[in-house]
Image (cartoon, rainbow, N blue to C red; front, side, top):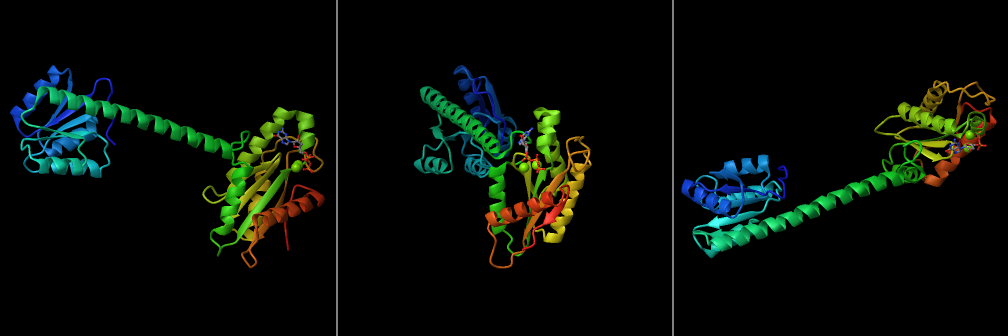
Length: 319
Ligand code: GH3
Ligand code: MG
Ligand code: MG
């Protein structure tokens, strides 16, 4: 896209192969108060000037040697440039005007120019361009705001990782994609976290959650896996293309990464630092296919067993 020129001081590009015509038009436009004027003496130069200066309006002579006005119009269209163009024809011939309009010209003028007509058409084209630019500007702002909103709606405010809502979508989609590959799910939960809050305070608790989330994310495969905050101090990891052995290796990796943070936890009954318990479930794609709710329930059940078996460990659901 060419750069956008200031809407207050519009830049006009005059394209004509004839020196006298260019000078004449330049003088007339200056008299009308337009001072930012660019000149091009052929089609190639015109396209270069549009690309590098992003004029607000192009006054384009149709009959030029080599690349004529029609070709310039076609090239502007092809590149998706939104610069308005007034086609200038000496012919006063309906066919050439129609063709220019079809090729995307905003308006036309015939030589020799009527001063009032030149003024009216240039003004009207610039006004339309100004309105369109404003629309595009607001549309972009709206799109950016929407993107931010969508991100916020799918992100956990505390840890910055996907929230439960996005997790549900990711898991549901992973289950229907790539049906030839197994899919695993890990859910994990911080051990004795209530005690952690009680001893160190809720703010330290929040900080611990953030560090646990970051360590889990760092242990997983960026492109492939999704670590989400499932709720409270419970997290879930969707592992596409991952069988039960690979999932077990991953679970151990996450467990270690969080233990290695060595966050002191004097209220824990299993270690002197923060640990987690993990449950693993796998859909190995043998029929009947598992639903998201089933996979989650199986991983939850395995997590419960891990807690019962003494915490700070991963257990695989075997069903
Ligand atoms: P277990 O080893 O069996 O998992 O015991 P636990 O104490 O971790 O489990 P429990 O479910 O009894 O307590 C979970 C605690 O997590 C209670 C709650 O205050 C705390 N928690 C949940 N969400 C947050 C949070 O966003 N910030 C903080 N600081 N604490 C939270
Ligand atoms: Mg817990
Ligand atoms: Mg819990």
